[in-house]
Image (cartoon, rainbow, N blue to C red; front, side):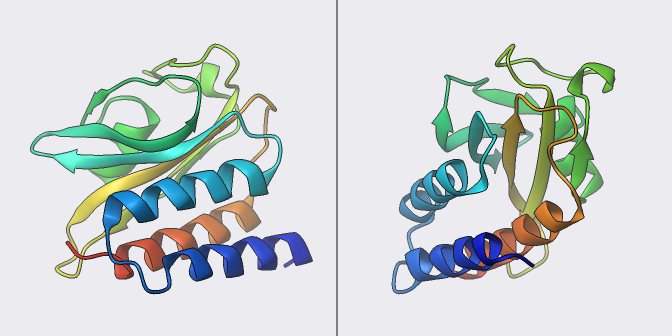
Length: 152
């Protein structure tokens, strides 16, 4: 890992330290990711509410408020319970375009203590192929730390 990734990982853990509120933590984590990752135009959270993902704290342009399970990259990551990395969102069947500037996306689900998916972290970039295995590892670590650091 490079120093900036290690720094971002440490910053997120520091932001989560001592705070258990999910909304407050999501707001700070979204800001840290948006400003720390580079070449991103959106970073934020969607939370599971019944049979939908509902928009949570984020950084970037206004976004879609509700996403059904299996819809777009976010809904697919939730339904499939796995990280999805999309190098070209225009080639992803059913992609939901909230920001026309987005060309690449990574979505990471996070789970509660019982193993149920509580939501997803979504990061978009205007740069095709922006996200790689290192970004996936970082965001999966962030998602796990976020889920463990909040009261559900």
